[in-house]
Image (cartoon, helix red, strand yellow):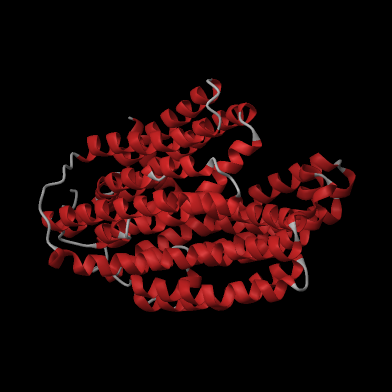
Length: 495
């Protein structure tokens, strides 16, 4: 006879289902959107000139930074806040609209100065038109946050997918009609305009003419901390590129840029899928510490399942990968790539902690962390640049673990999670990666030398994946259970 579940158990089952569904929708729609947009981008790149992309890049330096100020962090605040009142949502909407009008005015008036700085007169009109994205963004923020808050990622992801595909087609059509850089400008505007239509269609939310500053003071303070954290993140995360380019020159920057991008691919891809789901899930559990801890550990285990073998494997085969796939002209990136993969391991474990702290209402702790990174990492990069490319990478190896230890301390303390519990959660991943490394070393010293370059590289990848997955499935059934549950859920969705 089946055991009936109480209300709390049913609530947790519903949250689990929404979380898995969210990961599925975010991952699948991102994959489809990227395949289509990249295919169209290749065609557009053949039609436009480098100067068109250069003008758009100059404009986005200013627009991209100002975007951090546009939303005021209220999206995160709305997702985190429990028991939201309608007047709070409407008040925040009108505040964001006023702020976007202010930012657009600043952009419109400062466009001639920015164009003069870059010595690009055409930039004036481009900035003034692109600045309209601030106004469009104000209309996106609330419905986007509301759909995310309720974990209705099927609707949110459909809205993003349709707007991304249609805007990419818009860019292609305008490029074929020889609109030049305006193809990119109007493509950007069309994406946000379409996103407004789809998000409002799915959310069914319409703002009312009501406003109360007293009701949203707390939300604004929370949003200010989120915005400040994002600004400091933007500054310190781009400082290495600026310093390498300024001190070491464009050629060394090219080496560094590629090494950094390659080491970041596993983290960026998994973060783009997990982060949108993590914040609303953690927010739903902000007062359920036991469940919050369980979900945090499960998310961490899922991330390490992908990033650990990918980064350790890339570090091991960096020599063959660079010389065979990228050719020998990129040989100088081998050493930086290996060290940046180690940095990536720490990043992959740390990126879930900021949404955890935000969910608990501790956005000010993320602000402190970003400020600490801003105060320590850029000076470290500057000192390291005196010793060339290796010096900058060593600055990452020395500086980042130091600042990351602070965010780990804050996150684990917040949910009363010991370091031993945290590491034991991933011990099966670590052991399986060590087995993978042992298999690769045996292969390298026995028969790798008798194979040609491409077969040797394929052999490393195949044996690494096989040994890693085999070890997990045979000795650690908890991972098989997680994967089976996800696959069963996907199958049920299709039926």
